[in-house]
Amino acid sequence: MYASSVEQRERELAVVRAVAKQQRANPFVFFWSQQADQQQMQDNLGLEHVFPAIAVYVPGKNRAAAFKGDFHEGALVQWLSGLIDGKTETFMPQAPVKFKRVEKWDGKEYSEEKKDEIKNEL
Image (cartoon, rainbow, N blue to C red; front, top):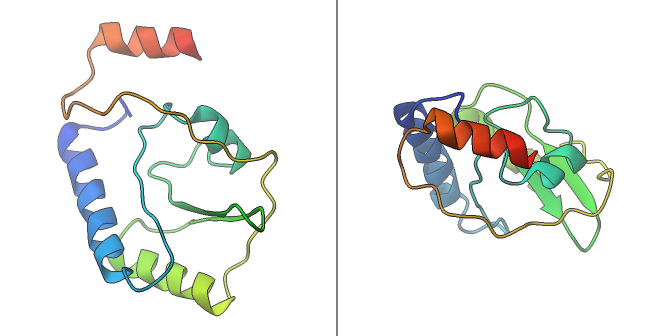
């Protein structure tokens, strides 16, 4: 989250929004989370050192898939199509995936004080 600039995060969010718009007919729900806000989920999905990261989780089947590739619209659409077609490999997460409620990103750069606060929480 603090490894990138506001501009870079906005570009990444624009890609996710564009892909989400294209995938409205498919059973995907999109959400965006800052790097350390969902640490347990990231660990369970094997996303510890992958940023930006995209993952799919199917709670009813306890299956997941993590995108590994160039972070651009075409690659993400192709990956999601592979999931729908059953061509993309999935895995069982290390533990049940749980999402926690966190503060919304304020759209600003992170200060050194905020970085230290986050590091202390981990």
